[in-house]
Picture 1 (cartoon, rainbow, N blue to C red):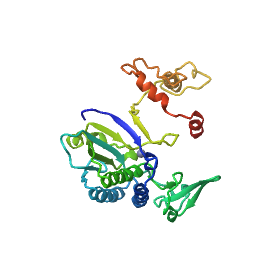
Picture 2 (picture 1 turned 45 degrees about the horizontal axis):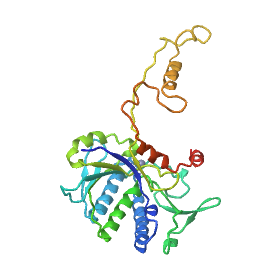
Picture 3 (picture 1 turned 90 degrees about the vertical axis):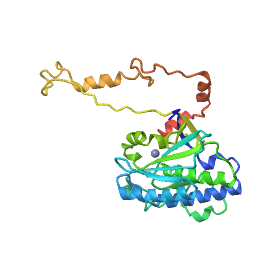
Picture 4 (picture 1 turned 45 degrees about the vertical axis):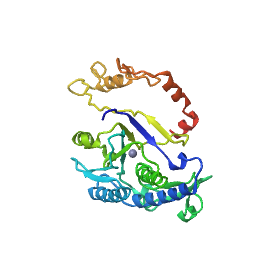
Length: 308
Ligand SMILES: [Zn+2]
């Protein structure tokens, strides 16, 4: 990728447009129906047949919107790729989303079938089931859909499709080339993805990467996050005596690997969460403009803490 900008984005159609037009209302209703149909296809990342059925659905839906689609084999589950016709003059946006979900334990769900979307409205005691027929005239923005992957991450895929519909209906030309890579085993760690990204480098080439996956901000406002935290995994071995020590004999004298490890872990951050590893923040600067944006985020600490 020429420029590597990662954006975590959670755009809710309900929030994007302050004034709902009739056209938007109709599209949201269509979006809800399409989410229900998509969620109805089980998507356990452990089940190859599930993943293939989802890919069939995606192929139909993206093809119907004028995308060229292809299935990319990997060492694990295949990836789904789609792109609108490419123009050399335009910059290219690559979207990443995932269509697999975690395994379900129906007993832990407050609905008979996690793959059958349930509509609920907030009431003083929690949430109350409502009929989809009630959405004919208006769609209350505080009602919610419940079902496996409804939000994470099938919802964003369906919203993307319907946003494309709206742009087309309003004859809005896209100033970008649009490509998508949809992951079929994100919930299992996306293990084949790094190798596949190298393998399909040319196909995936883009100027910007947009990730539509992640929690909505506590304020409920549409959220664009410029940058994601990465992850590094490693194995640490701490050493101690060659055989177990009786606490009353040499147990305190011999180094205890558990304490060595605890000291090491505890020493990595101070009480405010600042990393204490020398050099960790080298090369990182935040300019005043960025700080001003960060300060403007309407964080409600009490609300966040209550949620955590
Ligand atoms: Zn996700």
